[in-house]
Amino acid sequence: MSIARAILEEELENLIRQLERNIKEFEKLPRGSIRMKKINGREYPYLQYKEHGKVVSKAIKKSEDIKVIEFKIKKRKQLKDKVRVMKVEIVEIEVSLKHLNP
Amino acid sequence: MTENQKQKFWEVIDSFEKNELLEHLMLIGSWAELIYQDGNVLDGFKATSRTFDLDFLIKSRYKQFNPPKDIPKILKEQGFDLEHRYPDDYWKFDYYEDSIALYVEFLVPEIGRGAVGPVECEQYSLKATALRHLDILSTHAITVNTNGYDIIVPAPAAYVLQKMIINEERKPDKRTKDQRAIDNILSYIHESSELTEELKRTYESLTKKQKKKINQYCEIHLVDLFKEME
Image (cartoon, rainbow over all chains, first blue to last red; front, top):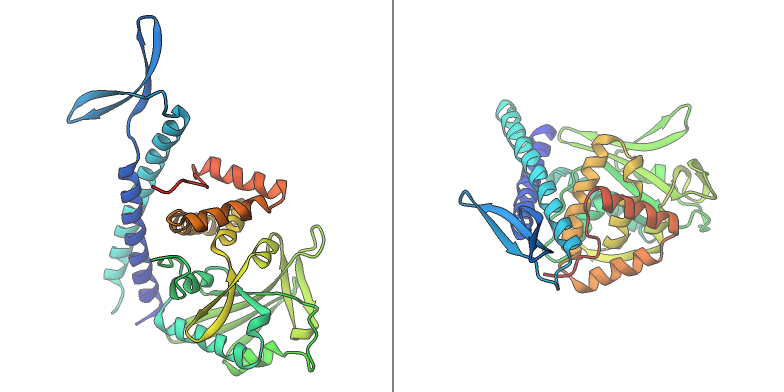
């Protein structure tokens, strides 16, 4: 096996493994955004996201740290980008491998 | 790394062991990840990196040997050629075969502020490259027994933190590769409360400047460094 093929195959294997871990982490994180709702003159934070085409609002408990939730939402978006880039790289490697001699 | 590369790697390790050098060298860089994997340092860990560069940190360049160690000769016997680059006086040992390529390099922590570059290591008969922030790795070393050898590598926490500190100084392609290695190793560290505690302790042992760089890295890349176990 050539060095190039061996490297690409290993990289492909690594990328798939990392992609799976990223997807797993991505699914654990909250989606949507934080919105403030005014009720009886007072503002309360809500986590708002879409589910089956409908907007869902979930009240954020007093015990929950809004900053932590905001961080997790950002992290989810970042992971979404990483997953997209990794998927593109996987396709690129697969195409390259097809053109390499066995 | 390919199976053939791995085999050559173990041959290098074996020759260092036979020449009583292994205990004076620390395997740093991405090959340390292979030791984390094979030596079960991180539960279930799979190394992500593949690289041709095999980096060894000389633990003590002033260690006296009688007679001095001759690393160039040892590596020559293993089929490595010395690449002596001018004018920067950079020493590297290259190995090429049909399906194998490996480059061995020796490093030392910088001596004094800004003293980076080639450094004479008489006791090892070579010039090593002095680099910044390697002290983090050398002061947080672990010995892993794998494949019948005691191999000194940085503790995973130190490995990750050092990568964060130097990330912005790296070339763009290596930067991305390092970021993936950080994400990968950190996710395994976070699965163990003991390793997360060690990460905290290592972070606390760093200088203000180093901590600042790590904090900046975490802010930019949205890294929850001391993430609680889920």
